Image 1 (cartoon, rainbow over the protein chains, first blue to last red):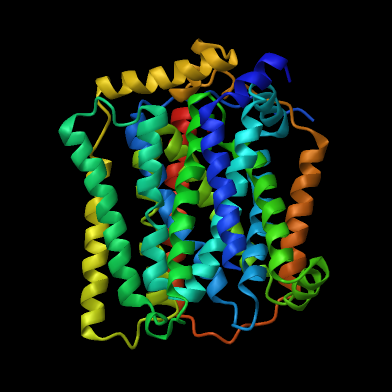
Image 2 (cartoon, rainbow over the protein chains, first blue to last red):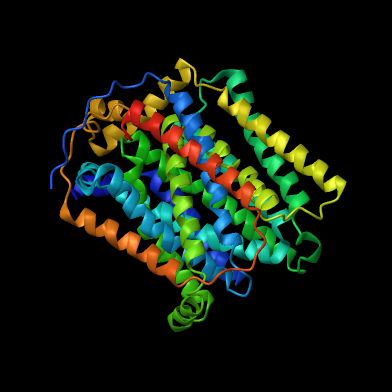
Length: 33
Length: 431
């Protein structure tokens, strides 16, 4: 994968919204256990 | 091996909105029917093992159906053109896995009546993300907003009423209500957010068949990890799976049906967006209810109030689906959709013309004959072999089944598959 594509991915808010939700969801799951 | 060139069939001129609506409704039929095989499993197994069996069946189906329809050459070529979307496809699979595990906790703690409507709000979360990130519904006017938002709320409300009427567990729910409610709400947010990768992939011109092929790795990997954690280690998980050997065929079959529904849901998300497509496919509860009530006689002891609630909830849900079906996007909204697509093309260096053609259902590569590889036959044989092996080891389940109604519902499930599959092929060649 090109460096420019990698930067485009890492600076894309549409990546970080699901990533943050996934982290919060996993944390919630581990807490509820 | 080479596939013979297919006979050229005229492309249909069906509008993409109508096609997307058909896909959303077909998704509901198959996602709802996916629950039927799991009802054949007697209790006594961990819900995590049931869920994992379903995901394993889905994994098998997610490799075979796309391979059968398009061939691995097309799928790999699609992935090579947009490699960045692999990240989002994996992410979507992981989101689904965590959400699904949360729903198990939710049902366990507050019962289906409270949990189901709460996580069914995922369509409203998806609608919000569609508006915020992909400019869906912008420029649709008050009427468009009223139909889509009103329809989505009606479907969630109808789901709540149905769950209330049909749940046997609500009065027996354990006291840990707050935990269950948080789990259900969390599942709703995760599932709603899962549609961000869906929509992003499709406005970038990715084929839904390629997307689900990658999605399934994130899904199976995360479910395996979570199941191992929840059962106290990988050893326990393997032991439980072994113990469940005689019933695994049913969740596998459910997983297979679920993949068909999921594919239609993905095509709906592609052609009418997540704001419209997801609420439509969320009417799957009606079909789950039909299987439960007509085939498994689950509602035989329902009071007249309960029956009234079932009819009311179903009516509200159908009205919501009709409202969304009639909310075709205006040109002003389609301009906003195009802006969202242009953003992806600019950011990731995609060919705008080609992506626009694919988004419009006219993938230039879709109708071309493609090479078939020898390993595709192997994939098919392995998949069929797994199902046959599981079926041979399955013990008969002593559960009441109404055969005439089962035949009727099986036909009612196969008809949308045939009709919608044909429409998709004739209009888009599954692009």
